[in-house]
Amino acid sequence: MPILSPVLNKDEIEAVITGIAENISFDYRSKNLVLIGVLKGAFVFLADLIRHLTIDVEIDFIGAASYGAGTVSSEQVRITSDITIDVAGKDVLVVEDIVDTGLTLGFIRDHLAAKAPNSVRICALLDKHERRQKNTYVDYVGHGVQEGFLVGYGLDHAERYRQLPAIYHLKSE
Ligand code: PRP
Image (cartoon, helix red, strand yellow):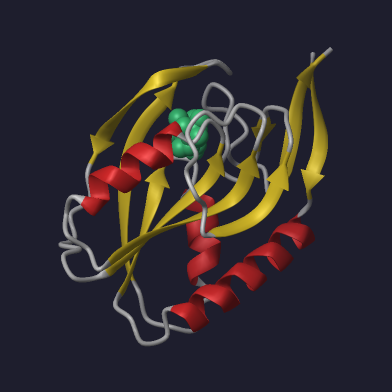
């Protein structure tokens, strides 16, 4: 039987996002910001984040595959769906639900940097240190966690649990 142990509740997520949104709104107040959500997990975070911003932004999505249906990360990352906005000369902020090994964001950052944007930065709701392989710098971090398999608020295990409004550590009994 799976056990869901709370990590961040709805109010805590809201507080974290409010803080990040304030910083982003200030830092990009006179820029042409394009937010790029990483499918699928980041769609919930991105949807809440943009409604806390006080600046105008463009939105796009990118698909990348790194995990299979289980909890073991594959070393291979590939782009499954590319952005459609021209980001040349614009400021790009990649929005991710979780950084784990860092391989996905490292690959996406390099992929987007090749499109000649003015800048590429990274925003992640969760920064998990347990299995970091690539030293991918995260510019805006919501919450750091040491370990565990996390679900809810967009994060899945085998495509389940994304709909949960809070974030949990998934354990098996
Ligand atoms: C998760 C997460 C990140 C990636 C992080 O995505 O959303 O994209 O893994 O892992 P890494 O730092 O070890 O590369 P996942 O591949 O599970 O796809 P999903 O977003 O569709 O759930």
